Amino acid sequence: MEPKSLTIDAARSAVQQRTASAISLTESFYARIQNDDPKIGAYLTLCKERALAKAAEIDTLAEKGERLPLLGGVPVAIKDVMVTKGVRTTAGSKILGNYIPPYDCTAVARLEAAGAIVLGKLNCDEFAMGSSNENSAWKPVHNPRDLSRVPGGSSGGAAAAVAADMAVAALGSDTGGSIRQPASFCGVVGLMPTYGRVSRYGLIAFASSLDHIGPLTKTVRDAATVLGVIAGRDPMDSTSAEVPVPDYVTELEKPVHGLKIGVAKEYFGEGLDTEVRKSVEAAIQKLADLGCEIVEVSLPHTKYAIPTYYIVATAEASANLARFDGVRYGFRAPEARTLSAMYRCTRDLGFGAEVKRRIMLGTYALSAGYYDAYYLKAQRVRTLLTRDFEEAFKKVDAIVTPTSPTPAFKLGEKVDDPLAMYLADIYTVTADLAGIPGISVPCGETREKLPIGLQILGKHFDEATILRVAHAYEQAA
Ligand code: GLN
Image (tube, rainbow, N blue to C red; front, side, top):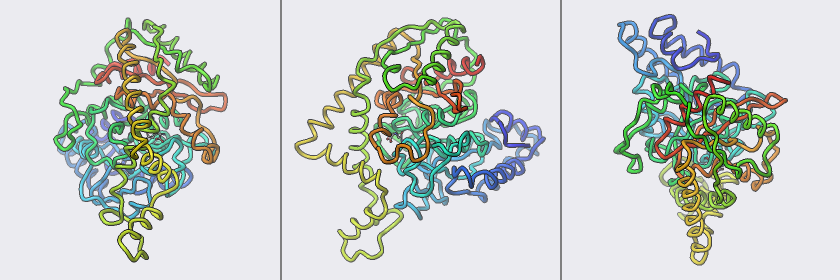
């Protein structure tokens, strides 16, 4: 069985019906990775032994004629910010270059409990800080659609692996757009669930009030399946919510006719690429053709989203990254003679330039005398951004926007201009700040054949509706 265009249901039923064994399927994915990944760079670590052991377990079940669990025999991969027991986990950073975690991230454990086969760990921007994957300490990722372009970030390896058929599905993380934006750049589906929907236990923290785990997949149905597996309360994460998890796959089939879809002019302003605008407008028309009612809404504080995000995220990052001191995890500078020199040298050698920039920005924003002017102000504006959505969602069931203002840009194009890189997150950071769910679904391509993404945002804990709209659009398109 060929990895090409393989979906979760197709993989699982092939293994169930014994037209393929889980072992042979796993081997064929590794063959593809060996062949194609040298030019793409999606994987950082492979865990063949663990994968084949799991595959053997699934084959035994299937041989006995037992019904396979939802992800039985499905090869998946994990962004390298989620810890995996006994398998090197680096968060894309040298400071964790030799870190072997002693436990599994809950989301990963839930995938495996549902029968998934974890092939390996995926490249990403260092500590998930970036929009192009160029901040990985190890290597860049190349967009499978055009190797001279970035795959997006920070879950660039996850999007590229799924787009290049080197995994059926992947787990990524989204703090300011890192699932949705790379999904849009690589032409796959990326879902960021509501804050609290999926446990972050075992996710290496970037900004704790913004971090989310979610799936990148080839189809909306696959995203619904994976979400159903990883969602729900986890006693190991106090921020995971005790909210019932619906059957997302069944919900997909409900009609979208009569749903109210909001369009906000603030998401179609200056800086939006004309080809992206055209595709997104055509997608909105398609939703109207499907019987959705298109309603204009206003999200007036959107213009403050980027500064707000880059204060809150860096402030939290500066605190979260304090733990990397050479004592407890990973790398330690060998030549330092005193304790404080050891801390300084370890962090100086271990962190890359962007991570240091964020630690400095965040430390500044939290420092005495500046806290009120920056951090406190940002938190207040965050509330205003959240209220914008609350008001809009009184009138509509979902809101559609472009996922990113441009298609995938060239490698190297923005690396020397962090501000330009930050500004490109304009359409994605708002959902993280408000804690609402969002999905990016492919909605066409540019003349140069670069994928474009349609973003659909929903109410808190209403992933079912955005999945349903995305599914209806995907089927119609
Ligand atoms: N690009 C954003 C940043 O650099 C978002 C990253 C993310 O979602 N992890 O912070």
